[in-house]
Image 1: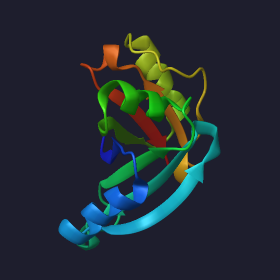
Image 2 (image 1 turned 30 degrees about the vertical axis):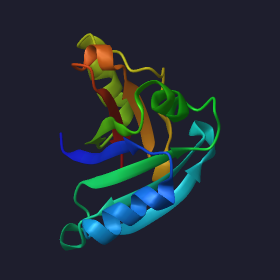
Image 3 (image 1 turned 135 degrees about the vertical axis):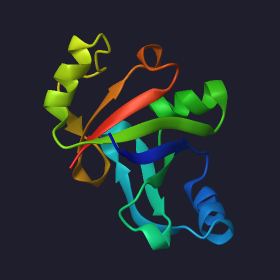
Image 4 (image 1 turned 45 degrees about the vertical axis):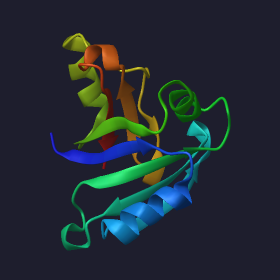
Length: 134
């Protein structure tokens, strides 16, 4: 599977985006608030590879948000790897049959209006994995 994006938990979306844009030369291609996950996100990419792997910055909007809890326990940093899955529901079935059940029973809507699901790090070598449908 192709890596869709790399999720990075941040305390300040604006400050972190500035680093990626000004010092690394990435361009911001999308920004939104995902109410169901209580986060604001920004997607940044290399301008020479539009449509390539993105960096997703995640800033919590509430103390009970999972990203806020992550930052509280570990500090800002790498949060998850997201893989593109043409259809998330069938991919979830493959994961279940392979012994890595998704955290959700069914796909849910995530950023950019895509269907998503997550797999607990205990099944993935310590890394939170997200599947992202097109």
